[in-house]
Length: 180
Image (cartoon, rainbow, N blue to C red; front, top):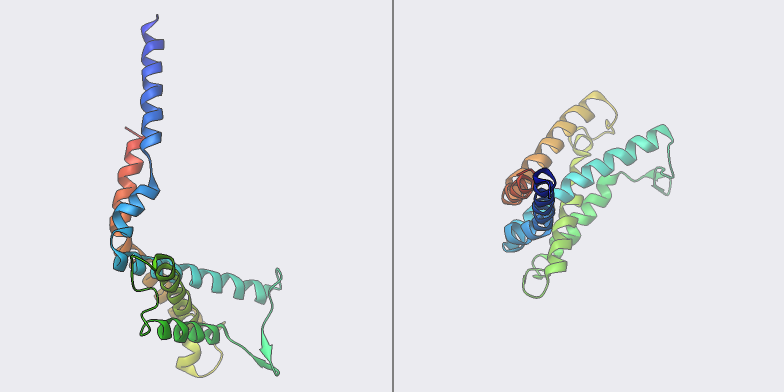
């Protein structure tokens, strides 16, 4: 047998073994799922970032008349998304003193869901921080967009990195396995 073919065959087996060992789910279990507090903080941060991005996408789509989105009104009064954010914060805040989702052994899904819901609700509320600050709708004005965009994006990315650092280190190790 030709040595180059034999070498390529062995390399292919090594490559398949590396790919088989590649497991982001395993890293998640090892780095975050073993620490319910860290996992909740991470999921809350991801929820915040996703909620902020989603709110911005939907509001831009409404403004441009794109997609199925439209402003919500009740009795002729516009409902800002901060109303839903405050409702979400009140709801998740109410569950906390009742200890809903706090037992990691029995309530893992609930714990994860409330953490993510808290993050999304926080984003919806903070995305309209300029409305609370100015007591007028300045969402599309310069003072309404720049500070909120910078603070929310920075806060979301920073907290994801802070709480997810062990996960990201582990995923980096997993990715290095693919290129060895």
